[in-house]
Image (tube, helix red, strand yellow):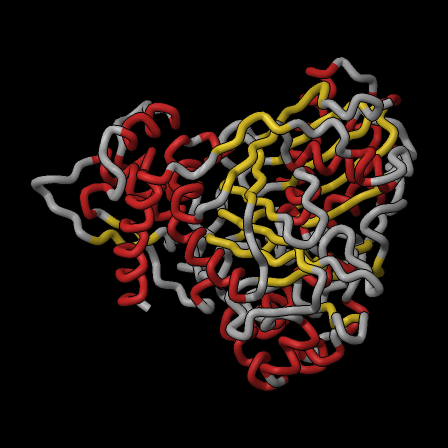
Length: 494
């Protein structure tokens, strides 16, 4: 008996097949093999074609089945994780009307800001736990103004995971966490936000019906099952935005627990049990996977847009041709902590929520042509990423979240010794690394939703810690000193 998880990222779709009895993955694949394209027709824009995601899903599922040797008939449930906040609009024939406006697009900032002030900052924060910001509903408001012909054809508005589930099952649904990530859920009244829809003049009819995060959300259509190599009627039993799902994969479910990722973007995600918010709305608060009105479980999400994308830019642009990421890490390690006075602000991938939706772009400070070379830039980029994490984690501390241990998957930029060492040093926290990923988390979420696992504890009993990084006192002092220099330079920009 096996479970299948899909993780719909902006760089690729990842699929894992998990043996439900052992809880261990037996086969994984991803597609495309190079980073998926992001369309950026104007500065600050970012779009992807939903039909491309569907192609990637098919290729990745077929690859995972082939590598695992598992027969499609033996897959008992499917789970979906997906890039958060994306806007997908379809017509009555369930055809996407335009490319999706994805998470790192910043065109709708002004719409969210107007709504925040018009509805009232106190009311928005107390009911939505966020400002409307640059999220899904604000993007729909942009579409309504600038592409009215498309807007008038919309049958339903969806998130990326809702779209993939629709392609699998033919049914259009969303979830309460999904609505909360679009900043459309009223936590006080426990319903769709009347305030926001009324302000933007958006009909409730455009919003998909709500299904539970865990539970039957539809069954594979016969034609789709044939395409995917699976069995007709296989249930889809879980869907969740990628950062909440990453926390699930790391068994981060209880107040005070924290998960982190460092992929294209970087995220620190802490669980809170109180309807709390940052008064300046610099971090986001969403319904977590196990949230209920009776027992609130809220994910407090700090996001830095330019993490892996900055490291990739350094690799492609600054380092020599053909260098691997391991070699890039070695290059960065060849210069001392603090990069001999060089600092990089890693904010070149759109407006940053942490910086109150300002788009400050990436900046390099202290560059000396007689001292600095590619190794300094490689190290300063990774240190700048870590210092951005630290800056945001201090905001989370102001909200009353005490971060003592950070859990992360042993993947992406957490493979970098410098990033791990610097993050432990500058924050004074232990970092625990686990052999898991979002697709495995989605597969186990499917097992919970299908009733194959009786509890979260049973689902994640096989999760094993593979490494722990503790702060090094002497190095920590150096990282903290470099952070103060970095922070002063950021605050001058701000």
